[in-house]
Image (cartoon, rainbow, N blue to C red; front, top):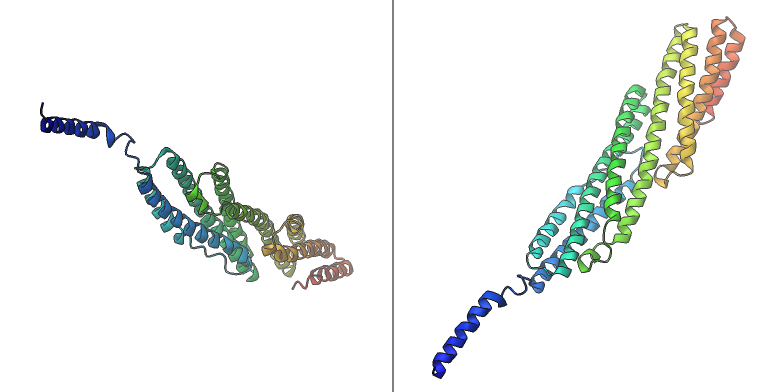
Length: 316
């Protein structure tokens, strides 16, 4: 074989060998290409993390007696979608080590999506509680109680959703590389703990406030019975009101020590109001009993003590 034939034959053999083995020896891995998509994904996750934290902070700034919490979790979703798309692309050329990092980043995306669901449900329950305040202040006590029941259901659903968040957070790898480093895991953990504290307090507050609203329904019924000289009915209704106020005072008293600053002042006020109403209802029940027995003197004394009980919290 002459030199030209040898070179041609050798070249053909090498080409055939490379086509069969060289280009696929790394199974399509292109770490640089994967790294570019992973970097872009990391930038999107960083923005998603910032937006998520900002939405969570709204609960700390909200006023329980205000207008509720207006979370805009739609600001987070586009960043999560973009990051997930970049990670999917990166997977096609990623090395084994890069795949581990991609998996961790996708786990964080799942965590963030569950966090979004939690925030939306929590905001719904929070807003229902603030709406009930408006009903209560407008003396629409039945509507307040009805709204607080809905709020309780929403807040319990939020608690279930938070359990999912905690489970996903506990499984999250904290040593998976640069992509996951774009999000502040310590801050996220603190955000979850703070929101959990607020949720627990709001669940208790809603329960106590509902009992207080139901007490006011009985209290109004008893007052109407007094006006209609139905003294036995008035005594019974005042006693029912007293029971509701006793329960609500107990709930608020227990909550005072653990309530976050966002609701602490409201809880302290409600403790006083519930206690005043409890005491007043007891006196008015005794007054109604005295009226039924024709004992006007005792009735007047008990009625005066009942009014004094209401005045201890400037309750009118």
